[in-house]
Image 1 (spheres, rainbow, N blue to C red):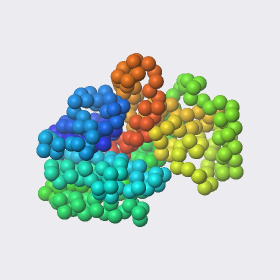
Image 2 (cartoon, one colour):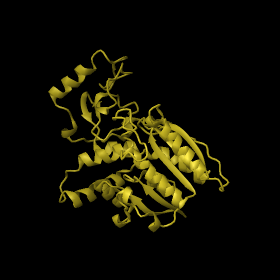
Image 3 (cartoon, rainbow, N blue to C red):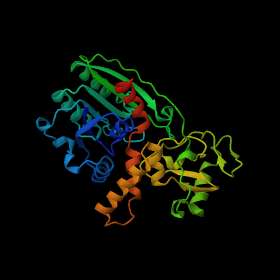
Image 4 (cartoon, rainbow, N blue to C red):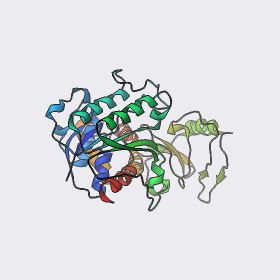
Length: 334
């Protein structure tokens, strides 16, 4: 039985991966400051919100139960290429500097395994010193560190999301680690699309004209498929990292999902991915989605269907489960 502490938990992608692989584990506590994500986490993993530590800056480390595995996908906004680049220097009170609160817990509790996830922007010249400081600190604490930028597409997910992963193992554990991504069957966008989609997810005339005009002259290899879909190749010099500025075929792989509704061209019309489709693309099941959605509707919206924005946000902030399954398979099974 692996005892875990989950920091910056979101909707619990690490826990979902462990569950999918039937790896026996017990969540000693989770830590999520967003009330909507905490509610979703609780519903999906059948864990009382009483286990939520809340604000990581206020955690009483001495009161934490012992655990074997610490997972933390600390806030990425200040490392992100699409963010303001405020960085994550210790003591600067940026969101990304909260990674050092995780490190303090690691120092005090010395778990056997630690996994950190973040955007690859942490490797750029303005932020790499934080990445190197993290590795050096864990090295001094007695950990072997393994790191690699992984693309979720290479784990078979229907979206391409690049993230840096660091797996740290205590030196006294006779275990080496190697990142292995195994695609049994690569999912395409068509595999996660709903059959019947509410008209509210389709763009109206003026919005369609505006979007297609923006892409004029920036698309290569444009051709109509037998299904009447627009097939889109590479986009020249995209101005933004936002999903709303990209158009794709359902036969391809989606780029990174963001926290807002991503746009697709489907059946000769342009529509957003539905919230359910965005959850599927991140590796969560329909059952997970409906558990979270119904819990949010009951707790925050008096049972009314008003949760789309929060459901998009939760999937956009999540780690792709398929990648974590590959990591845990190598770490605990193979």
